[in-house]
Length: 114
Length: 113
Image (cartoon, rainbow over all chains, first blue to last red; front, side, top):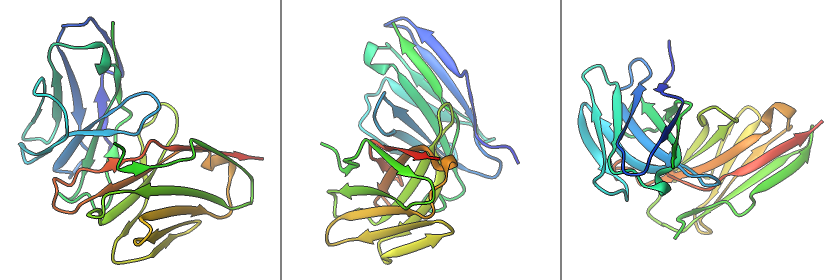
């Protein structure tokens, strides 16, 4: 049983560019959430997808968007990158919509915007 | 405005002793709490959870205590082992609210041999 895998592991982009981050959920998990973790802080909820539909969103602007595919893999897209978008982006999948058994996190994608 | 606070950025404990990590929250609607452990270059790993209908949950060396009136929870690790050295995040959620979790900033635990 594989865990959550994210790609790429590291990425450097220029301000104003667009980026797509990818995530493969743990087998059998139909819910995926994306988190942003800035340096020295805890993960901050971006949004959650359940069966290809957005199921909740945190306090992030519309230039942060996502997709979930029929095989439950997921993408996070960020347009018009800003310097403050530099962070570790974590994808987490869960077996239930409530996440009551905890999330399984990937190792993250470290995005640096210059 | 942090809804989940972990006021100790770091904690050092001798191997074999008890580690106590604390977490405070401000939102009285939170009814589900989890602890995650994170090693460098890895994603957070789920450790233990507690629902607001309980005041204690135990799993091996790990015990979480919840004091709803004080809006406080703590994670006890007994006995502490060097492999427990990691960053520990407390997280809280309101069941039914998109199931997103609000994380604290983390506490770095160092268990000294």
